Length: 311
Picture 1 (tube, helix red, strand yellow):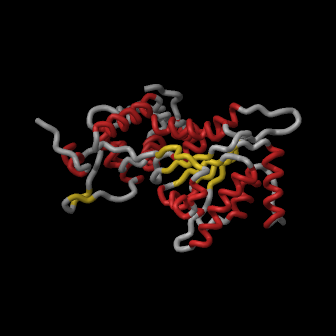
Picture 2: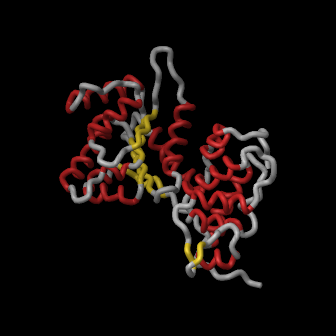
Picture 3: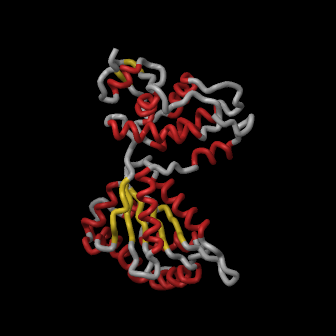
């Protein structure tokens, strides 16, 4: 493994963890986002991408955002901001979203509301040369049991596309799809940009995919370590993280912080110690706490719903 320096800094750790891994589902979704971006100036092609929490949707949005920004050129007359990404919060209303976009554009929306706020947003989108807007966590636009509110939210997204002539990308969990069921006219403005899935070891395809993902992580791991993509480690990682990439990120963060001095190779015991302080829930089997990285592999496989190893 490559050692970048003797003492690993927090910046090194963040850079390692935030470097995206371009796996197939990720690439397919990224292609859809780029198609949406390139549709500016034509009838806009908007897309939505869904997946459970911790499958990389936010990383996807950040990656698309940064790649588009890096490929765009600023003119001497104005600063182009070709793409804007906003993260919606629970209870977000249309005017809140408009203000969030303006803030991302460096515009103070204080004192603006209603029609004036709408006009200000359109004006600034034009001034800044925005060609795509990405809404992360778009399921937060939904209101449980609030049919009329949900309809107004759907109308907001539809009217935003129609009046600004900008394509949008919606990133969120499966709940967000309810918007399209509530308002079929909204659905006609979107194509499905794919879905990001939790990693799994329960099928050969899933195991191959997960193993490849771990291989990519290990190739650029910044400290000396055992290889989590080899032998039975993919199963152990799957049990420890439940296939959730955010949980895997927490685990690796703990390992890197604890061993940043790089004095020795990181061992299985180090990963187990990191798991114990980063786990989401304690795994209990037959009244005993399970240690995914150090327990017998057959116990791990059994808890994953897999048969015991032969021999």
